[in-house]
Length: 310
Picture 1: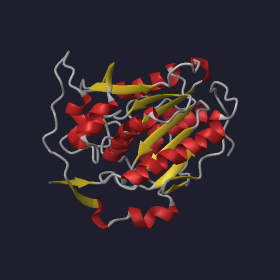
Picture 2: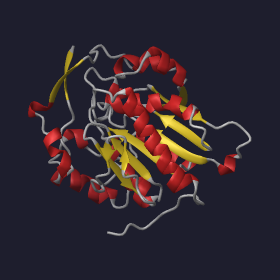
Picture 3: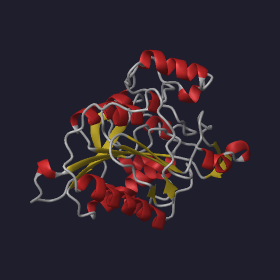
Picture 4: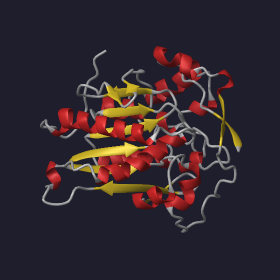
């Protein structure tokens, strides 16, 4: 077994979770293989399960195969495929009437449970019976996830969740990194907004797919965050709403504040230990109930820029 260091605490941890987050040393023993796969050669197309299965806690071979992830045609900094999967309700639902929901995991490569949960939810989406077009990107940061020791940042050392083109990025993102994080290398926003192929890919999905809801899965702080319009969900399973603020270059800032797309950010309790099956289903059912009330039963217009009130 490999000794893996959990992500360092952010500059602001929700007060109700500090006691849980401040584990002495922040060390966990976890069965994380150290022999990660090498970056593929040009033109190679390894399957998603061949790449990721050993790194996804709680995911079985059967679940991984059933997810049927496909290469998107885009690649990471090191040339690994960025996989996705669309789940579309069958006819007679008109495409124009379908809610578009984007689910993203492993923006941070060391948050292994986030990728596992996104992949497990694909099977639940297939059975949801909602007029929803789901798009899943379970592993946005494959280079970080498959590093010998999984890393928060991508192969160029960029925190993808600080690399989005939010207003004032050129000033605010470097200043925030320098002053608030004290130049923490795990939170470097990069040399420019959207400098990385992975953030460019997700940005393109936001622009082309035009999701009416984004679900971004993280770990390990055990809270539920929300940015954007609509009344937020108060809980998903055991996770309770505890808004943590807005960060320069983050997906919540870009999608929820700048673009007016509701962004539900899930922070699982652990980065390495997956939630139990009952909790996986409970979070999913709570998400569907909130969508039924706030999104599916309302006349939701195409998302556009909104103004945030402080």
